[in-house]
Image (cartoon, rainbow, N blue to C red):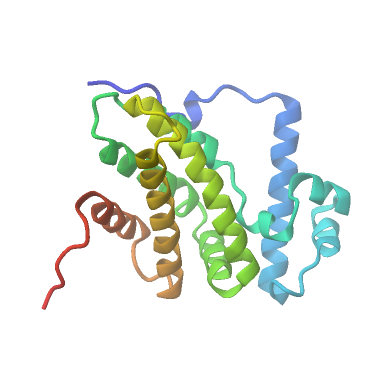
Length: 210
């Protein structure tokens, strides 16, 4: 049983053109400026004008890349890559195992790659209602993308009730897992929490331990 090359492996990705590299560099500059300002003065006090000045771009450039301040905090490049990664898993692999393996890799990139940024983002999700609301909207989009991947994998229609319920149960579970991680001071291992979440989705609520 073999899998296709992993889209999450940098060596397997096609080289980006100059224009795309500049876009990525600009997005990263805006994100870095935003995170630094929030650390210094808090989320509410941080303005788009300040972010633009720190990132050395115009406010209109910030809005061109990120429609809202919440999007700067929440948006990343992983959704399309995760969909590709799921498609690259072995066709005969159990679906829940494919999800488990892909999420482990995503956590390795998104959390272990920069733990302080991950903690800041999830802390803001808990503390700032606007960020949490925008995150829920974003997760809805992720769920719709996941429906397409599940449909391809199972031969079902992407609009089947069962496909939509499973996809949205997963993204809702991951959202709650992320909030739980932040609410408990980021003490737990996030990969371990995600494993627990997937076990609940796969087997149901376990009996309470006395």
